[in-house]
Amino acid sequence: MTRLLVLVLAGLAAAAVAFRPTGGVQIVVLDDQQRVDVSIDGALFTAYVYHDSIATLKKPVLYPIRTAGGQDITRGYPFEPRAGERVDHPHHIGHWLNYGDVNGYDFWNNSDAVPEERRPRMGAIRHRAIIQALGGDEHGVLDVEADWLTPTNTRLLQERTRFIFSGDDSMRVIDRITTLTALDQDVVFTDNKEGMIALRVTRALEHPEGKPVLLTDAAGKPRPEAVLDDTGVSGEYLSSEGVRGVDVWGTRGEWMMLIGELAGEPVTVALIDHPRNPGYPTYWHARGYGLFAANPLGQKALSGGKEALNFALKASESVTFRYRIVVLSDPADAEKSVRQLAATFADTP
Image (tube, rainbow, N blue to C red):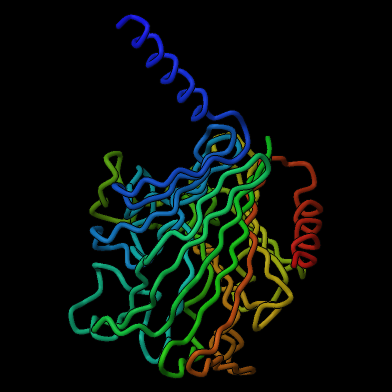
C-alpha cells in the first residue's frame, strides 16, 4: 500500500511538472467556460472568448489583450466594467472581426442594446469548433471555425480563423488569418463604415478630448451625468503615411500605431495590413474615443463617395484577410519597430 501511494504521488508530481509553464506560449482550452486562454511565459496574454450565454456578445472575441508588463490595452465595459471607462458602443469588446452590411444584415452593431425593431436586420457570428490549439516555445496556434448567421439562423458565411500568438519581454504579437466562404448564396459586403478588424482600447489609450463624457464610477456603474475627466488619457494615432491624431479617420495606410501610456508603462498598439488583402492599403475607421479599426471594404463611406468597392463572393467562393496586431512596451523607436514588423509580415506566406 505504501509503495502504491509512493507511485501515485510520483505520477502526480510528474504530471505537475509536465503542465507547469516553462516559457514559450501556452494555450489552454476551457470548454466549460467557453474560452481558450493564451499565456506567454506563464502570464495571461489574451483569451478567445465565445460565450453563447452572454447577451451582449454576438461574436467571438479576444479579450482581454495585455502588454508584456501585464497591463490591459482593451476596455472592460460592458464585459467587465472598470472605473473611469466610457459607457458607449456595447458591441465594442476586445478584438473582433465583422462587418456592418452583409447581404443587408448588420454584424457590427449587434448587442443586447439593439432596439427590438432593428433586431430582424442584425447578424451574429457563432463559434462552431476548435480545430487546433497548440502551444510552443516560440509561438502558439489556435484554429477555430464559426458561422455568420442571420436572425433566422441561416448561414451566410463559414469562417475559418487561425490566430498565431508570440511575444518576448517587451512585445506581444497576434497574427490573424481569417478565411470567409460564401455558402449556398452570393454574399455582398456593401460599402459601409462599420468594419472590419477592430480593437476597443482602454480609457488611457484614448485621445484626450477636453469635453464631458459619460464614464463608469468606482463600482463600474454608469454615472448619472457626463463629466470632464481626461486624467491619464494619453493616446495618439500615427499612420504609415505620417497622419496623426483623429485626422487618421478615413485615410489609407499600410499600418496604424496608437501611442500612449498605461500606469507608467509606455505602450504602442499597432494594426498592420497585408498586401494580399482586398482593398490594400486599408482605410482606417479609427476614432479618438478608443475604436481602433481597419476597414478595407467600406471605401465609399470612408472616402466621401470618391471610391466604391461593394466586395462580393459568389456561392462557394472564399476570401482571406490577414492582419497583425502588435503591442509594444519598449518606448525606443516604436515607429521603426512597427515598420520592420510590417515588412516582415508582408513577406510572410
